[in-house]
Length: 319
Image (tube, rainbow, N blue to C red; front, side):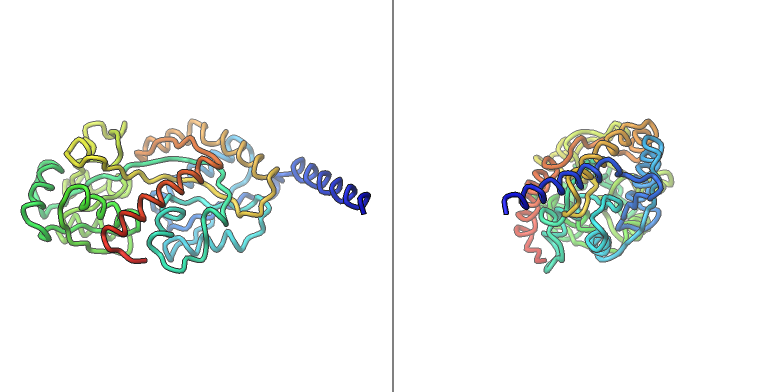
């Protein structure tokens, strides 16, 4: 029996070494599952990322769009794929952090079912007002909202934009009426037409409306100003102490992917995110690099899940 165990262990070692030496097969494409539709900020990021992988490694990449159900369809596509290192998931922090807070009976556990590969980027949201108001600053809007509870509205289209609005109300001591939309584009259009007053959304999704003057970015949600929009103050600077909403993007493998494959792909991705074409794409989308990998991403998921669970509970939001 002891001999059999040693032979089995040796076979596992040899198999692992062989897999590590043959992976990745350049004749086999790397499938990047994106649970968003074409034209979204996630799409722009993913296309730049896919190009960078090909530029730096010679691997062929294919983007597989799986939109719907708050990214759950895309997650299930990963979970139903072979854990062989040729399918990865690219999602924002809403998938591992906010969905567990806001969706009942979620069919996945991000800490149990995902292996975090590499962080790609982080981004603040912009505090955007439409033509329904003429406030010159976020501070002015907040003062008016305090004086008129329930008068002003904010659009939401994702768990991120909804909870960002709830956190603003909690920390600023104001009461707003939420108006949900199916997509960020629909919410931004409503903002530009005067249907709603406020929307917290990533700048790249609303940028085309800035030029027309129908949507005005007045602040950013992160703890520091954006290098791409340095004239915009943070909401902390506008008097909302401790406000910090920073969306971030990362890539994941399915949980049973062999460790040797995970390590090899992580090295490939580290080279890709340093490619000039990728860093330029981040800057154009008002994003910044996110230098996290593996367990550091898991720790961030735990920390932010705890924070947003409290926000949802305080706002009496039920999954």
